[in-house]
Each structure stands twice: as C-alpha cells, then as structure tokens.
Length: 403
Image (cartoon, rainbow, N blue to C red):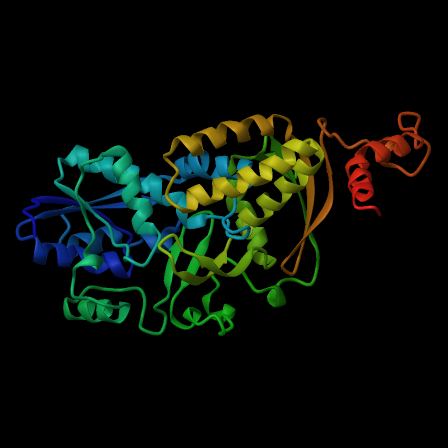
C-alpha cells in the first residue's frame, strides 16, 4: 500500500463504508481517515448515529454536508426540463448525487490537505465510474483508493463477517442485506432475491417510500401542478420550492402507489442488472411535464427534443455530466422550455397517473382548428392539393415500376 497519511472517505454508513474506515486503518498504517457524508435527502434515519459510528471505528472526524438544495437545483431541475430517462424508464435517481458528492469530496480533500480519496463502490457497478470521473473533473491527479478492487473480501456476506469480527454495528442483517441507495428523488433496491429476474419482488417487504397499488386507497386523489419554463413551481396553487414540491409529491405519490419500477437495465460496465426503484414524486413531475409540453412545443421541436432527452439521460447515467455535450444539450433544453408554462391537473389512483386536463397561455392547441365543426381558417379543399404534392414521390415511384 502507498504511504497515504490522510485519506478522505465517501461515507454513507452503509455496509461497504461501515467497514471501510477500519480496513483503511489496518492497511494504510498510521493514516488519518476523514469521513464525508452528503445529505442528499436520504432521511434522518439514515443519518442518525453516523458521527458516533464513524469516530468509534477510527475516523478522525465526519463532515455531514447538506446538499439537498444543490442536488435539486443543479442536477434534478435540468433533468426534469430535459425529460431525461435512461432506457426510457429509469428516472436517474442514483446518478444525480454522484457527481455532486465527488465535487464535495475534492473540496474537503483540498481543505484537509488529504493525500487520497476513497469510495466504497464495487467493480461491477456504475457508481465507481461516476465518482471517479467527478473526482477527475475537479482534481485530475488525485489518487483514488477503491478497496473492492484489491481487498480479500469477495461478497456482502464477507463484509458482514468482517463487521462482526471487528464489532462494527450494522443496520442490516443477512436476511435484509439488499443494496440500497436513497435520496430525496428515489430509493433503489438490488441484490438477494432480486438478482434473479424470474422472482417477483416482495414489495410488502422492501418498499419504503410507497405502498403497492393494491394497498393504495380506493379513491382518486387530484392535484394541480404548475410549471414555469419547465420547472415545477406550485401544487394546487401554492407556491413552493422545487425541493418542497418533490417532498410533498413523494408523500402523496407514495400513498397512492405511484412510481414503482421493476427494471432490468444495461449497466455502463457491460452487464445487465435488475433493480426495483421507488420514485413517486419524480414520476408525477415527469409525466405532468411531458403532458404540458404536448400543447406548448411545436412538432419539430418536440420530436427533436425526444432524441435530446434520450441522449441527456444516457450522459447522466454514464458519468458524463461534466462534459461539453451535456452542457450544450442543457442550453438546447433551456431554449425549448421558454414557453413550457402552465397548469396540469393530475389524478392518482392505485398506481395510475391520469391526465385531468392542462392549460397554458403559450398553448399551440387551437380548439377551433382541431374541431370537427366549421372553421374559417381551414379549407378542407386544401387537403387535396396537399396530398397530391405530399404523395408525389409515391406516384412517381409507382409509375416507374409500371403500377
């Protein structure tokens, strides 16, 4: 091992990082470990007792950084406006926090004059890439320690054995040893029985933010969501910060079984992986925003933005947030959102999202033109000439073939 006298550790208090302070102290003799936790909305239960635990297992100090406003304004809001998802399903909860936490790790490392940064990601996951590309963006030459790549531990069961041997307290057991990631946008579940895609998830056992649609109330919940330039600004006419809107919609969405996703995705590192995601508030916002865009964006912009949305989601998922392309796509998205202002009524019922109507002062929808009734602005006789010109290539090709 290199002679790193001071190491900054990305510390969540989960299984991996719970044992990592002790492991670093064992393997980098005499090193000081400074733990850093990003509060990205994982909740008080996740943060409770972290400092005592970190110090007891060998850290010299613990930084707990409140990053909730930053993750919302700098990452979630641009992605909402983009309408970005990965593989048209995943609402990108985990990728939101990684580049932000990487930035803060570098800031603390520079402040503390640390020799290296350590994270607890495995070699099979996406997060190792997200953390390390983020670190490289802010500190290109900073050494990064990744215990999963060279320690003797081979599984989560081995980690639990190590914790028990060193009297390191854990909040999980061998039976509840799911790999989870939680922030204010979502909660992900992986591992154990979920690793086999033929197994139906035991939702009553694993869900924390939501109930199943079967257990949701047998009544419709209605709400109105207001947007300004693609950003949610109010619920039922009450102005709120985006952070508070997400938290409120997490509550009402979770109560109605909204936003539960069981997905097999293609990881950046090449393998397929199965996960269950809970994203109640984000699902409501994403769907309402897309509905509003249908009346506020012209056809060409809307169709082209769909391509941009897919690429935007891919860049975020694949650790390319700090790239010129992502910045350029954000500039394009911001231009498209200049007229995405209005209100959307949403109905929630047992896992279903129903469009209850929408309006905007920038609406391009003309009821008079779209109606089957009389319209002085549209002469149906014009359709004949339009079709003749539009179909000209088809007619010429048919004549060439002798048909």
